Length: 360
Ligand code: SAH
Image 1 (tube, helix red, strand yellow):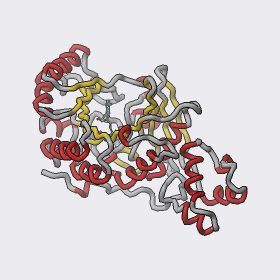
Image 2 (cartoon, protein in one colour):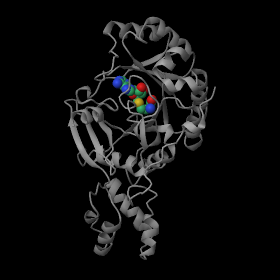
Image 3 (cartoon, rainbow, N blue to C red):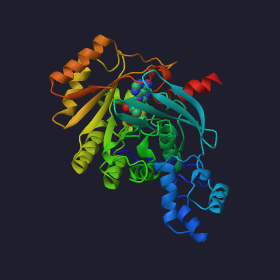
Image 4 (cartoon, helix red, strand yellow):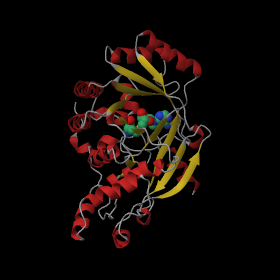
């Protein structure tokens, strides 16, 4: 079975686009040309925004004053407003951003040693319907634009002191990134600009529910990214129960697409497995997962479930979690448990948006 390509990229961003200067397709270079401005000014403006954290065109003090005023009249730097800003004791910060059309998305800054990782969203809502995830409860509303994806990066970078930079990006917020590749790829390219955020592709992780055509497209576009595939079950029956989109795809096709990505990229893959208490956390489930991994050069990232209000799923007990990990380790599987960060600020995808919507 193969996923229908039609399931990819079906949600158009809003038809009327503002001129968003953070969007590489905003027409800035052409606009500058029409005003007789040299082409390098576009790069200079981007450097101000990405590398020097300018918050307004007025901050761009080496641009002619008239040009700054014209830019201000025709372009917007920020299309979002910060609806909620939360900070946890462990240094995690989370933003709920309100988009120009009133929709809301989440993004998170995680501090871990020297690492400054941001977790960003790719869509408003999600169509994949994973039964335990807060993001998909109301389905997908729309794709984010490239500018909105870049804006999350810059909003989060602006939370850091001037001498710190973002080091890693994970596309693990709301949405299915491989269902919005047309907008995501230019945003990730922008993030790598050495004059801007300068984040190497090797420090960018794209997490997917496992859409084979999307994985192949990502490999063709840029296999330098780190791919993480959300499995959550090692057999088709259970996976289809937890990840309904699996019904039309099947684990075998997900694994072959992941293997093709690995062959093209040469980079170790990550498989994510959210442990749901009493559902997919038994030693037998672990043994099935070990068998599925086989001899693959892969890392299994075990994620204890972050409970979502109103959902029936539970965290695994500590005993179940340790037993599960022991089985994997005894089978020689590389395994890592994702430490909980920012749990108190609802830092699992989709939770803050939902909490805020329910409170208002
Ligand atoms: N759609 C992509 C990326 C977004 S979700 C994907 O499926 O990978 C990022 C990861 O968070 C996925 O592995 C997802 O299953 C997991 N996740 C979602 N809700 C969670 C929750 N409440 N607790 C723990 N992990 C969760």
